Length: 141
Image (cartoon, rainbow, N blue to C red; front, top):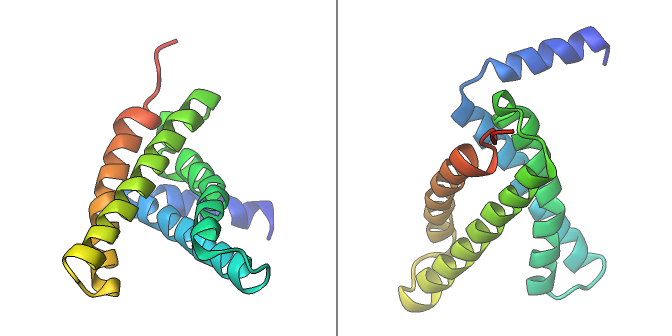
């Protein structure tokens, strides 16, 4: 891809509403997470719960870079401090997701797919809010 085409693609992405950029990056991170779980379990026989935790760490890199450079690019908060804050947000989101999912499955006996879909939307709203107003907020110098 030429530099001109890459720049046009980036400009097109930057012109999208911030929430849509957030969804695109989140989708890429989720796909990375699922692929990593599949590879770890199927090819390397890693137990699923351990694979899920490792996949979270792998997908975090995609998520942080995408959100720092695309979703919240205008904040220009690409520092170790913002990475640490976003890791805290992502870890909290992962813990809330797992807790709500366990409750939905084991206590409420909801369907596994629809309960996870609803929880993902709910957690994403919290993740977006914490990311925008805390993790990637430009810090005073």
